Structures are given as C-alpha cells and as structure tokens.
Image (cartoon, rainbow, N blue to C red; front, side, top):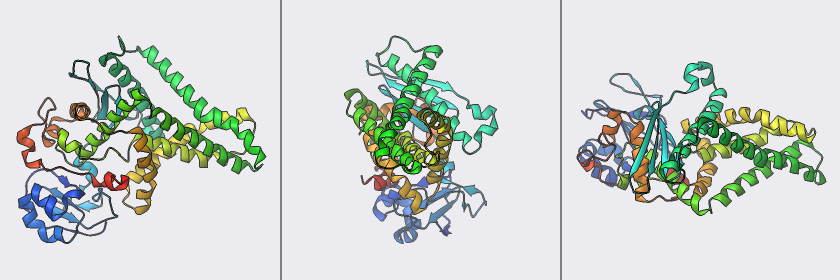
Length: 408
C-alpha cells in the first residue's frame, strides 16, 4: 500500500471511506463535487482510495487491482497521529438468510427481519453476549473460530425458527429442547454425509494405491466433491432459491454499509451479491484444510479414522477461521487469489434479490446499528431511508472489490 499524500481539505465530520469506484473523475465529481475540485490533481493521477478524518483527507496510492480495503491500521492521521483503519469506519456485522428474511448480528445485538404474509416486515431484536466475553481465553487464535462457528449455529437455528413462524410456515417457535434436538440431528447428518461416507468409501481407493497419505488425500477429494454436489443440488430446489435470494440481499446490504451507505434499496442493489466473509467461503476452506490435516493421520481401521476426523473438526474449524480472517485483512495478491474459489462458490448459494428482499435486509441491519450509525447511513429511527440524508448520494455506488473479483 505504501505512501500516502495528505492534502488539507478543511472538511469536518467523522472518518469516512470513499470507495474505489468513486475514484474516477466522472463518478467522484458527481457525488462530492467540492471535494473533487480540491483533490482533482491526486485523483486524476490514479489513486485508489481516500479517507477523510476530521479536517484531513488522506489519499492512498493504488494497491492490488480490485482491492477495496486500502486503509488499515498502518495508516495514521497526520494531524492528530491517530491510527485509522477501514474496519474502524463502520461496525463489523455479519448475517444469515432465513425463511423470507435476513438475520444480522453486530454491536452485541441480533436482529431477524421477516416479510410476513401480509407484506409487513417484522423485526425481532435481541441483545446477545458471546461466551468469549465471559471467558477471554476463547478469544485466542484457533479457539475463537470454534466459538464463532458454534454461536453462529445456535443463533442461526433460533432465527430460522422465528422466521418460519412469522412467515406462516410454523404455528410457534421451537422450544430450547426442540432447538437442541434439531441441532443434534443437523450435526449428526453433516457428520454422516461429510465424514462417515467419504471415509468408508476410502476402501475402494486401495485398488489404486496403498500409500496412507494418498488414500487420505483421495478421501478428502471425495469429501469436497460431495460438498460441492450437495450445494449444487439444494440450489436447484424452489424453496431454497428464495432463501438464497435473501442471502444475496444480505451480502449486498453489508457491502453498501461497509462502503459508507446510503442504505437505500436503489444503492444497495448496485453492489455485488458475493462477499468474502460469507459462510459458504468458510465451509469451502474447512473442506480444503481438512484434506491437508487428515492427510497425516495414517490409515488405521475405519472406526479409528471416523473418530479421529470428528475429534479434529474443531481444530480444522479453528485453522480455517484464522485463514479467512487473515485473508480478509491482507492486501496481498496471494490473499486475493485465495478468496476467489469461495466467491465463485457463492454463485451457487446466492441469487439476485428483489427490491422487497433488500428492504428486509436493510431493516435487519438497521436494527443492530447504533443511532449514530443509522444517521450516518441516511436512516431514520425506524430504519427507513431518509430522503434528506441521502439526496446528495443519489448516484449509484458499486463495490468493485467483490464485483471485480466475481467478474460481475
């Protein structure tokens, strides 16, 4: 990323990130005409990103093609000496598609927004506290990935239960006991499909080789094929198609928020439906990492092989989480290449959403944002776009980081 020039712009307000697509004479001048006049020499020279902090504008040089995250903790405000980062310009949020809705998590809150049969958007907002807050050791590398995966599974099932009820598919939400039973069945089914079956099928590979490492690698390849086939199969189901549309709406909304808003349907729809922090990408990395971890376990009897793989799954999840976390924070070309397969795979698990689906995703995200963040995104107290706040931002915004990576 290298050096940065810091022209005095005499601007006021909080730190803002001007996304990549704005840094062209045409797009940037339409949205920030006064700022463009002051920075036009630097912008026309082909810089890649701009951060505004208080009264200082920091213009960064072009990094690897297609990368939006140009400013990280290495960048400092020349006026006040504060460390600044793209991540600090907005809260870290994540989400999940549910039945006729979207769940968003951020700032110690979880919101599930669902489109009811009558067209009304119902929002269920809850305060949440991670177990890692009570036990700080669980925030350590490798351990935190297991915690995130477990908590995401629990919150996801609760949100699915709520969405099924509000969408009219269930009469009432599942009890805690029923949720625990559902989770146990889901985990057991996953272990059978992605652990037991490919491991048991390994005996057929003995006709090709007797080398333990090669047998484990072939078993891992079969596991990966089963995973890809599973995603391809469910993506063709009519009921799942709509869920995947809401998945696309979730990604588009998070992209728009991370780019600085505004959170209007028109603006959100201009962003890519693919996101590097998606759970689909994480699961793909889990599959790949498991191939290499299990490759060194030898080739004992079938029961020992299955048990060893089950016991090592938390280790695999922890390694995978650290990998995707590191790749998301890195601007290197290698990290950019590493996230590509996950983005390609998301073309199976996301579909282009309708405007009414984007409205639901915006409502869910707005519910977890603090009041000052909602105002910054051009939303009123109810989470609806405020025309007065967004009038100057009518030009569509494009998240080129994901769009270029996805070829969209």
